Image (cartoon, rainbow, N blue to C red; front, side, top):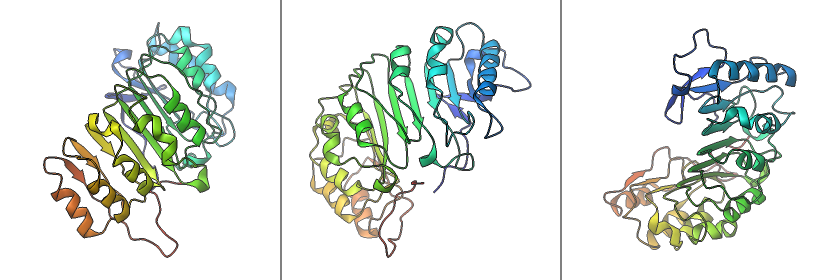
Amino acid sequence: MTINEKLSTFAGLPIVAWDADEAPADPTAVAWRLEMEEFDADAAEFERAFEELLKRTGEGGPVALVVGEWGEAYERSFPVDLIVRNAARLSRLRFLFAAELTYEQCEISWIKQDDLTPLLEAFPRLESLWVRGADGLVLRPVRHEGLRELVFQSGGLPVDVVRAVAASDFPNLTRLELWLGVDNYGGDARADDLAPILAGRALPALTALGLRNAEIADEVAAALAAAPVVARLTELDLSMGALSDTGGEALLAGQPLTHLKSLALTHHFLSDELAQRLVDELPGVRVDIADRQQEEEWGRYTAVAE
């Protein structure tokens, strides 16, 4: 699977391009996409587009911002500094997607990121942060009271980022989604690195947990089977990974999951029998077992890597 389509909505709002012919009457009623048409645009061109966006959205800037191609995203890191320098002019910003690029613009594991901690420090009222790509990605442990949703999409999420999330103080975070990825693309975290989250010590408000696109899906499933945090989840997402019968059996043999509203397992390597058992033994839970994969001679694979 590749990411070949751009979002049409973000944070429940329709997405409008920064240079759309007709601006919406209410600039706060949409999410604004800021991106360059040419992949080799330079930093000055992107900054001019950013200035034009601020003019169109008025005092306080956009409520929701989706940043796409900023120019040579495979070589030049996400423009954290530009956004942080203008934090005072972006006082309305609540929802941010850092690097919503399709594979045609830049493969997910080639997207250059940076230390994103300053974004959280500069925007204490930010409610949702989505990040795509992990090459050069850094996160330091941080306290942020406003954040409700945190999503990292990657072909390989560095262990230091996983540990930083687990060590951060996000008292109001209700949804966490980590695309753990594969070791070959930098996804070197293990289930033990998730321990503070799984033990329920971190993220006290968490109700939706996604540990997706994981090469170590079986290991994660085994850890979840006895993880205290599961008892307060309503949504658990293990989709897009390399989950096999080993992981499926661990889920069934572990703590009860019947309290969940949904269990997402799409793109998996479960046998038909084990997949059906998961559906049958979790009545009342929406168990999604679509998109069964066939193991290759060289092994199982995640949905998104490069």
